Amino acid sequence: MQTGSPSRQPHLKAALLALVIAAIALAASLLWCTRLERRYIHALAPEFTPEKLQGAALQKHAFSQPDLLVLYGSSELVKEMPNNATQFFQDYPTGFRVFPVGKPGTSSLSVLQKVAAVGDDIKGRKVAFSISPGWFFTEVFAPEYYEGNFSNMQAFELAFSTHLSFELKRDVARRMLDFPNTLDDRALLNFTLWRLAGDTMVDRLLYAGTWPLGRIYCAVGQMQDHFEAALHILDVDEKLNPVPVRGMGVMKWSEMLKRAAKLANAAATVQKKKDEVKKKHLPRASRDKSLLPGTAREWTDLELLLRVFKELGAEPLLLAMPIEDIRLEVAGLSPLPRTAYVQRLNALATKYQMPLADFREHEKDNDFLVDFLDHLSAEGWMYYNKALDDFYHGRFTNR
Amino acid sequence: MSRIPLWLEAHPHMRVALLTLYYLAIIAGLVVLYGRGNFSTPPFVYQGF
Image: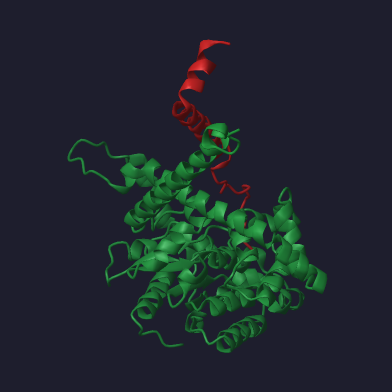
């Protein structure tokens, strides 16, 4: 009897062979994806696609490039405005280009998950974070904003991170559980976050039990991330490698005129802002009480983000938009909450030894922001750009 | 017995090769079905603060 001979076990032999071939093909594909990402990472800098914002592969590549400066932020990054950092540094005027990451509603809790997913690729790298004051004057912001920025892949990377302490993951998990909609149909993530948040001996044991499965999920997520990034690059390949066509195109004048009109409107914004002051003026005392920034959950999230930066060994620059006098006027606020906000921001920056540009000297400048929704004007962007340039070249000093 | 199983019985290496292709097709199917990541997020209207 020949039991156990290869000819008697063709299925086992074939299955093993298929697995080996598949593993080799997978490794080769990943290598190809990584090369493609590295080749196009500079061209992808101005984009705000889901592959860039919700994944981690492209952000990791950006951190590996010495001539890219990653800037995390929210809607101000996306809003079309002359002099915005993406546009201003497009041609590497001083040797680097800005790699913006963020979209409307990207608050500190979303940013910290992106940073955690990048992991130790951020170690020793410069990174900038733009802080929107609006987040700190709302106790609890609309969950839709967090949900609209949520990434399953990034959340898994945080929950099963090998670079962050258990205590930090526990504190972040407690905040993430405040948004149960993001955990629907994600049983393992939900279970893991509850174990992290619970932090009893049993919870820690159960967390350790989920660890192997969690790491498998992370590995699958990382592979999907590479494939999605590569597929996206192939999709927009022509755009990333533009071939100049001379005299063959037709100018899209209507689009260009609309854009020009939009930008011209931005210049007349201050008058619009003043009009809004007249419309919205409210009794000062009634607003001060409810808008004191001490109660906003964003403080917790910002501190968690700073802890993530610290534990990962990043070198961040914090950029905080000023709260202009005109904004206080429209909200019917005294300067007291603003002073409290700036002081607390400075205290946090000092605690974590991170440079902060708070632009306080521009509080009387009504042109720094283009509206009351934390969007920088063309002028505001120039101050941001100067701070980014100084920071990149090691000239930044706290102001 | 039909001729194909007989032929496969007579050519064990071809049998293994065909089975390998069969398993590779299954793996490829699984990759196509579940391999793509989902980075879409629910839409929302941003109204600022």
